[in-house]
Length: 242
Image (cartoon, rainbow, N blue to C red; front, side, top):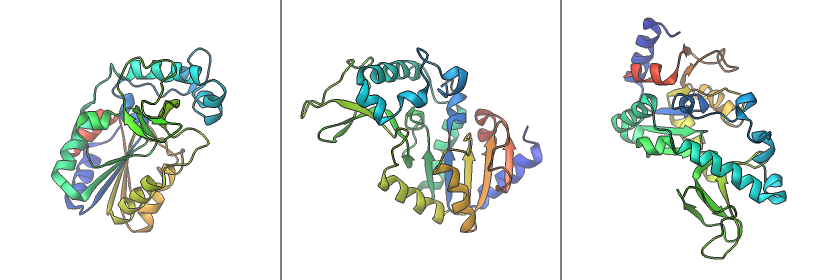
């Protein structure tokens, strides 16, 4: 677990930082009770998330995929932001235009907490995208119709999620690159460090001379690269950084 000396050192680094970029992963949402949908805890009707979250699965059986996403939406709707989410909102207000948040999570908890300066690089489960006209809209209806249709062109809607085999949106990648190259401190919270391109963000920050601090329950493939690794739950460690 993170020691008092490590927490104090992290506080000093944050206090002296001019531009801060923060990357969050499943670990921060897990502290709110959001499952990761991977491994043995990720099973749903005996399907793996990796088999359902693909363009091919949606093309083959959109009803099955939407049933899974409705189940996920119903589950996530019962969850609330935790102290780590709340602390990042406070930091955003403290740094105003000097902080940018990048999240791999699609649950919308950062926005629910009040974060505004952020990139949801894998999408948002509370948004839908038309497969016909491409319009993106927010939709918090629970449950959605099994096969929801666009009100504008009546084509099938899909979750506004980056699925396996799809590329991240170019606009988000550009904004992330700008934030990483402008920061002098990168805070990596609750991410496994194995999913690209986010797994490479620490290297980008290091290349421009930024200090990198990691917060995670255990060591990750990035731990040897970072300058300071704090072990513990995000909801416990992040609030201590204030």
